[in-house]
Length: 314
Image: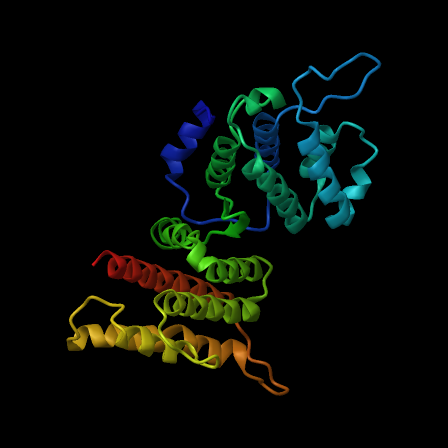
């Protein structure tokens, strides 16, 4: 739960809702709030003692899993392993690590655990947790927003957010649509796109975005038994789903133009910037191009998905 302090309300009244995000800093206050939320959502770690403590509510298994992943995947985490209380060890790391990517990696590991815990039938109380895991995840997302730090945990990944409006109206609905089993491959590719973008691998981001778009088209073709060849590219696949009646619109000139953009937009970005060999002079793929590729892919995925749902509802 987020308690709105006087200083928070004053800051919001003065500056309004954040529309410009930071990505390479993590304020100490944010770190502390995230750590407290992990404790509230996962539960307490109980140190072994000479007395029986089996009946004491604890989340030791969850913290042992988090600790094991951090020790294996985050080399800098080993500097903090002198602390025997695993919850406190994780807290110390979150508060102390300077590298923003390693901080975000640790937060992502904790968020995955929050997403994994099941709070039915008193499980929350058995762990000594103060709130449900899904509620804690939402609080962490709100804390990032509160401090104008441009990250959110969605679809089991920590992703970068560039625009609050774009995320709410395009990215998030696309992510929700991709949770359908039919679109599992497209979902994997789209989340890979976000991972590359967050890590600054802009060329790989554009290439993965195109793969996500193509996977979406192929999934629809597979579901409807519409023929296509293995080597078909995005433009070819758009032609095939159009010919097979995916879109309900009348084919006037204006809609034909939309279909043409669907064929040309992202594949052109990919071919020009990300896919073919460039020889000795590599093409620079800027963050702006990568961000455009993500947003365009999400828009296309949403359009394809909603068109497919409309087709099935006819």
